Image (cartoon, rainbow, N blue to C red; front, side, top):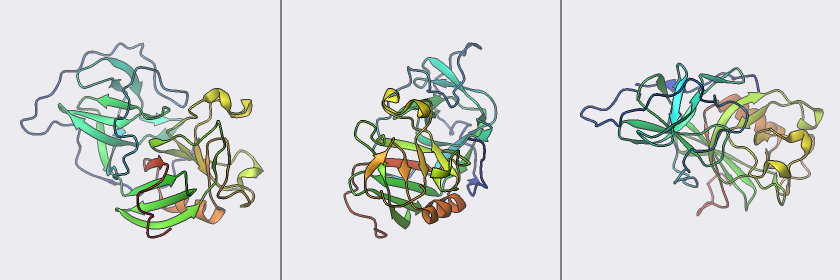
Amino acid sequence: MGQSGDPTVAPTATLSAPLAGESIAPAAPAPDDLPEIDYDPAPDGFPRDPDALDTTALTRGVRPQRRLAAYDAPGGRPIAFLMPTISEVELTIPIARREAGWTAVLLPSANRRLAWLPPGGFRTVQLRDQIIVERVPYRLTWYRDGVAKRSWQVSLGQRGQETPLGRTFVLGRTPPPESVYGGVDIYALGSVPDDPESVPSGLRGAHIGIHTWYHDGELGQRTTNGCIRLTRSGQRLLLDQVPPGTPVVVVDKLPTPPPTA
């Protein structure tokens, strides 16, 4: 992963400052030897995302301006550091909730986990886009400002390597490493395989991705190693329109199909 693309998110007022009259839980000092969250699996100890399958759009994101200590709860235990970049890509992380003056973000390099940040050291941006993937109808839908723009049929993870459920986000984009990806850049997501040992050895350590394939004959089937495959034209459109930081939610099925289905 090494390209950030041309983000279309717009800066907004910072949320790193507390709201007027808000009581803020104090932050314990973070030891300098805590691990840094990077492309490798995130450290254990972060809390589960209680709203992992919620498809409500997350409309604000955090951009770290320096090394940030990430905690397991407001006023809780520091576990690791979030950095301004991962693999040389500027980090934009969707905000999931706020409590006691702290901000919870979707944790990179982990599935269905949150990291809590005390005030300071980051600015916020508006997130206009959202991607929802439905596993049962094999469908990916792109939304902007809450409106469904396009839907595509996709291929998803095979048995034992299912595409992970829950909320994640577009971590960044990278050139295709092999010709089977159809010559189109890949989105690396913040999620990783639920069972890292189940994927082929050549893919160990890789994140779940959204990408195309050299043919479309497997759309609507469970044939991938957990990634989400769509058509080349669809991937090119997403790459042109959807910036890093965009929230992605994988569910089994929406209660009502999107109007673009």
